[in-house]
Image (cartoon, rainbow, N blue to C red; front, side, top):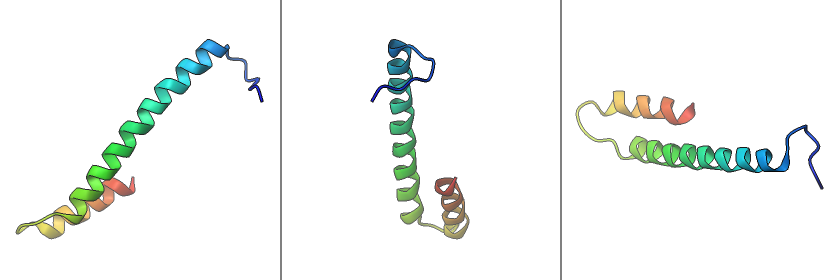
Length: 58
C-alpha cells in the first residue's frame, strides 16, 4: 500500500530514517533511566528514586 500524503518517496524515506534514529535514542534513554531508578543507592535514595521515576514517566 502506497502512502499518498503529499511527500515524495525520497523525502518520506529520509524522514522515516531520522524518526527511527530518534525512536532508538528515546528507547535507550528510557531503559537507562529505568535502570538507574531501580539501582539507586545512598542517603538520598528517596529523592533520586522519585526523580528517575518522573523522568522515565515522561
